[in-house]
Image (tube, rainbow, N blue to C red):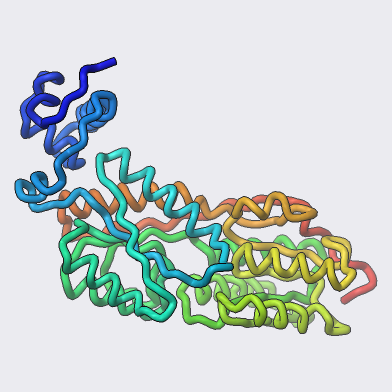
Length: 347
């Protein structure tokens, strides 16, 4: 077991490196070779060395922290996406010797106000912004402020330069339609949200484009919409679709939580998935594999995306590159038992 060290000088001496090199390695500077950074971080952990954040901030002008604003939606809300994302983000940051600050925004508190506090207090060197709206005041503020950030998602405005990573939901929803169409389905349902989120817009556009490409006048699409965090309204919207005498034979949901609600309500209505109704989701949250009979979905690699966003943000902080960093990831279809051929007795 290595001897415990309490100062940067002691850690540098134990490694045979200069204090400057060790300090920069712990801060994740790209000027330091990756192997050296990894060696320094590992040695620091083994020796129980914890950097003095106040001293590091005075010397480098950086805190070593990255911020994320966490909206509080209510005591009964389970958010599988956010749990995966925060885990991956923390993993990505700690691998480079940085840490994550979670700043909570209460239900009655504007997320932008909390974000401003994180930025202007100097507690974070950069921030990650999730769930991007079609027009997002958070990104506009960060850009005006010149503060390092990476967005998980995109704006509709292509002329707005910024750093982002996103999954190609439009392609996934087109793929879902084509697969179901080839299985004989012609009457489709879409369960979506009412909020103006960019991912909603892109996924719905992908579905609409796939329908248009077929040019088949027999294809029908019904849409059920509800506020994202209103479970009661969501259940009502789903049931209105399921209880129609000419209900769809296949439903595509904007994300897995909506798809799981569809399967739950279908079971209550006496429908069998996929014999009576095919269902497809998006995200591949843990529950999707266990909800009977197993939800067909698209794996958005949430945890890995968050790790990559951490790496992108630390690059932005260290290099301050003028060129925006962008990446579009294609999600992978995860076929399970919730989809199948269209019922023979239905159109």
